[in-house]
Length: 323
Image (cartoon, rainbow, N blue to C red):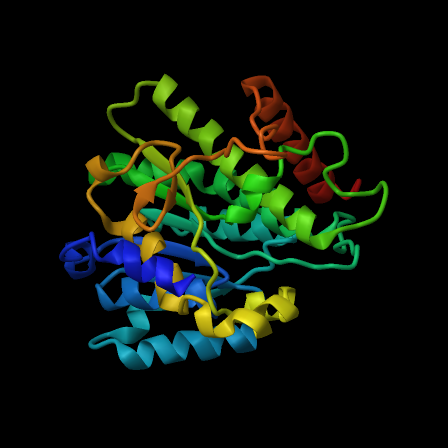
């Protein structure tokens, strides 16, 4: 909650990373029209980064883009732009990746922020359960698709690129789901599905990070990171958990406080962060907890590889029209 943020921030000292000159840096942020994504986009643009906002809804995306442009000084139209893309749709992601790659635009940071918590079982036009399509499959597809661009940018800039997933502490209550990732069987539970998807994100980031380290890259390196923002006062939370929101809204973090660690991970010195790490309030925290029913969330490398294989298979079927 807000009180936790206020307590943690007392130990941080000066936030020098908020003063770094980010001119020449390109950052892509999904779900950037509101909440944590919007605050992240606005701060990085204020510091000079060229921000690529990725939003599902063009009207809301343009409105958010124009608000940020109005707040930053000098050539604001060149610092923030919008790409309309529904990250639950594989064909949309494929087009975004293809177009961005062809543009020869560098990419220093990718922030996978877009997400949803839908409580009624629904499927996308490609036949994938909506939460899973957005929170897990979309993150996998966009990250995998843009990895060559991130690597090329790292080589050219002689500095590691970064991928950041905005996950959730809810994932601490769930393990990787291999048997029924789209919740076809039994009673559908959107809250649990969301938590399972966030567990998938964190495990995926850990897998990508381990691969990166195993290749011993001195150049062209990517740092893969995940974090959770705490309970923040966002439109997404209000829609997803209205009862929770109404009862605790006075205690929630502001959207900016939720975005604080995302911005820190995107801008801080590389020696302050660890490959594959899971972060909260600017420090690395455990990916698993050990008490009561929450002791069975650990997983093997084999299980994570199987998870990745299923994500890839789902992507391929959707793009091939076989879903």
